[in-house]
Image (cartoon, one colour):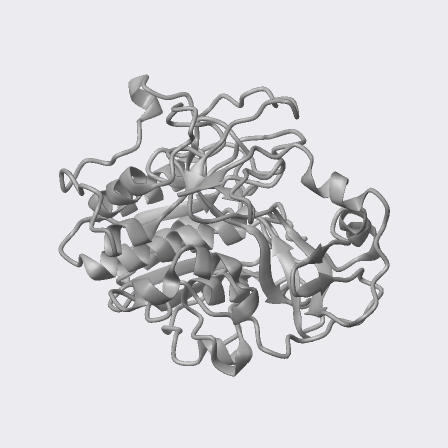
Length: 405
């Protein structure tokens, strides 16, 4: 788990694996989730067939219109592995603005996975990104001491080096807004750059609201699962602006062999960033505010009519509504479409009380997700699996139901 909160990182220790063991020993359609005691097995057909959200979002049809070409997405995260087949030719050169020595131990691969989810080409059976013709500007920060000092610098660097979108799949670095972060976010906003950040994976625990997701000018992203249900662990509150798939997302296993089921608002954030890249590529004359407004207008809305929802914000991202159905009014060019708490029309600084498992609400949308990452490798059917009693119940409780459009 990443020191910044584990937003999508693979759990590799036996202690961390124990949490998921009781809830992820589940048979899913044509493939099976195994416990960490079974050696990871690579997909015989590659990762693409297990990226369920691409089909739900009608990715193949969208790519005929836009694949993210012409858009640079900065990924502020751990080191991105340029040797991964699906990232060949996708990475732009960048600078290392970290000071001091990097921490001991190997990188956890989180940055690589986020980059692949956004712009991976699927080469070599690897991850197929939602915006495969976008370019990634990888901006590496060290986990110790929590990256707080360098992240504002990286935001400015990304803006000054042509990034239109900044993906920040992390949290807990900033318990509250700092002056350096506020200045950097304001700078990016003034230059029309969109910023997406994970809302967090502690919605069923302390549900602490942290920066940068809580900051005005940043789009906080929650996670939904295959059923388009908000996951119990996705942080909720007035800061949530959009939701995206974040559950059962293929990521390279921690030992580098095959792919494992991953979960987190990290993954949801990457998919939201890629969605924005698709729309912006198709409408290069739009501003970031217009791209975001179109995503908000076309998002799958809660059926109870409560918008924004503290769980889904304005809904689940559906870029195909803009690209294929030509919906979504971009509106004014330079008006940020989210409320500003400083003006009294929002309260993103106050964490809501966690709601009970009985609180339900349906949603209209195209996609789904789940928080953090498990060590449960996926393999093709036909192999044995020991399923723990009651595991499915433990995995599915406290979800808000959703419905596809």
